[in-house]
Image (tube, rainbow, N blue to C red; front, top):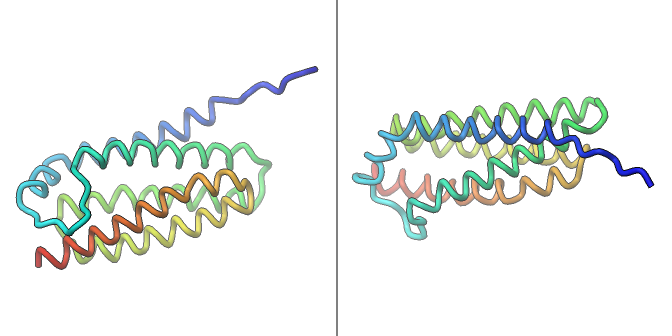
Length: 160
């Protein structure tokens, strides 16, 4: 019986790309985050600050695993679309942090987050056409960004 060799390099690449973008966003917004923690009124159900990096590390890993799974499928329009959407939503994710924490443009950040959520949904649907598991791995991300929408809207309303 011959076992198929596991191709781990694409997983390392896509996970590292996602985690790296998240880490860069965190580093670039660290000062804005400190100001945010000290001055912003937060809505009910806001998790303690230590929860966010844990959740995001897990979500970026799931994003990367999903992208790697899609990347490893045979070339197709659906595969190309899914990976392009993955990159676009990752860029939107990155920029949201800057808009929210550094610019403190909470209204704009809320509408930006709606666009991000729609991009994630579109990416997930595209992933589903190529690799169902890759799509299912995006569900926690969709749910967390929906929750982030509630938090962002609450911050906007409470800090006008």
